[in-house]
Length: 218
Image: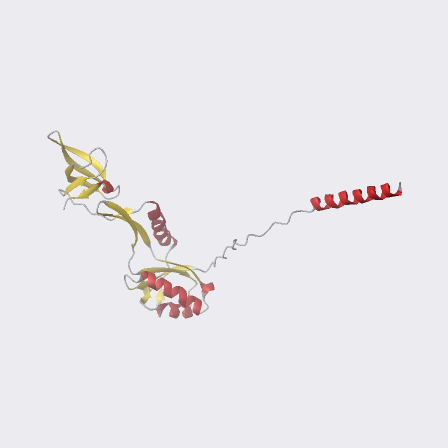
């Protein structure tokens, strides 16, 4: 009888221990990949640095290296080059590349002071700040938004890097009129379309085509 009571007591203790474990709140594991969002400096303003045309990316790399070397990371935000996606037609095939649409300009978001001014102005391939003399001019919110919006929207709809002229001979490469030759009558740069006059059953007929569905006849 005593042994049975001991076994019953042990079973009850085990049950209570199990219930206590289940009642403990689960500890949420931290995601090792999660990074805290940087605190935005309210004194940041956008400025433009003039750089040698064609060296914009090199200048951006040099700026980022110098900022780190001089311990100025807390005074500088984003360093951007205004670019857009451009689609070229090469041998009848589309190829998308990134093009600088403001050559010689590098945008820097920062809290500018005299020390930072000297560090950036002395960056190789930099000729100076946008502004008068030694007084850089900060961009307005409207100017910054216009540049950044163009860069972002260009990623969604690349522009075609191809020029057509009125009365130019072209060949249609896609659609129901593929392989027809025609003459360019109208050009719509914004919509990236052409009105091509094509001869169908002996009559000249206007056909609207996208830039990418037409190629020049060499």
